Length: 182
Image 1 (cartoon, helix red, strand yellow):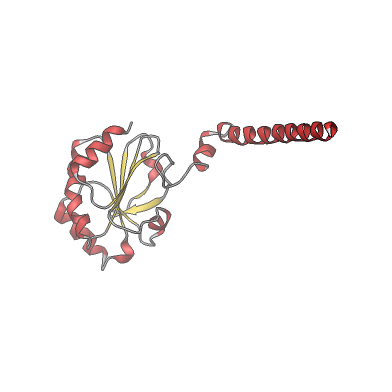
Image 2 (cartoon, helix red, strand yellow):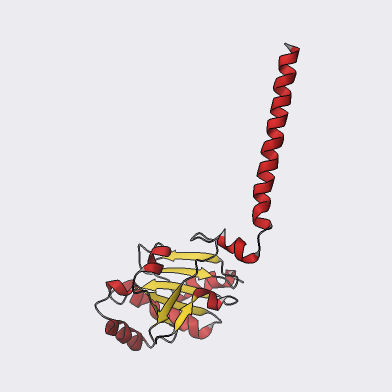
């Protein structure tokens, strides 16, 4: 009987030692990664994740990608011209863009628009000065799992999502969340 108990204890201790060794090596895996590898392993849509990178054309025909703005705080906003809540929040986004040191990237989900001219007219009517990006194939919309518009992500200067808003933002809310970011 004593012999069985000793064997069970030794097997349990051996099992625990292996478990502990494996779990330590997994937790060290991320800390041993280079910066780029660490980002790839922590990209997602939750607060605290690195925002997924993408490349899109602006309304003016320039190619930009989110990573171009590393080092800057970014408000990434998904919208459409026919969306009344989007129209409501755009003046506040423009005012915030003018008042603060922030990049606003307004991603239009083009495939639901009647025409690109409608987008141009919308931007002109509201005198939007920030970059308007065209997601013609809804590729970025799918990456960011956009099911409701407007949807906005506030991304800090390290590329990490700090806030996510489903629905309309107003100036006060933008300012409140912006002040929490580095």
